[in-house]
Figure (cartoon, rainbow, N blue to C red):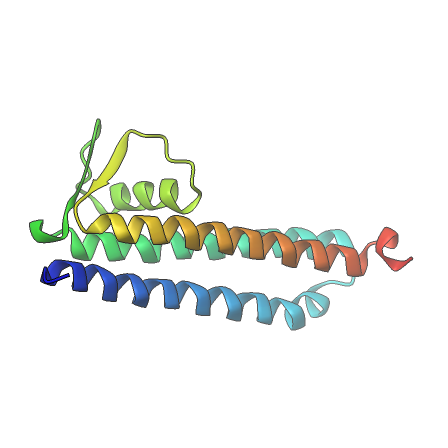
Length: 149
């Protein structure tokens, strides 16, 4: 690990993953107090929760996109290759969304040290999506009649 680019990718990845986890925690924590105050109707609370979670995931995808955008301005960190050219911030957001959701269409792929960040984004996305699903399940179980048994 003598390549300085590896350290740059490692530190950037730790920073972005920490931001994502902290954001996710704070948003879900805020939802616990916020949702009952917004509406006493169960259906509205669930819809609001899902919208908040989707927006949170979108912000997390963009956090990774900014990480890629910042690092890949220099060749030593690697590149993203494929059938489309990744040049704009929106292109990086597209790539990030494919990695975060583990969809991975295969039209673009990472090369070089940046591969570590993409692997960690896939793992982080999987954990955040699962965390969101668990939180939603618990919220629904608490408020829906079938969960009151």
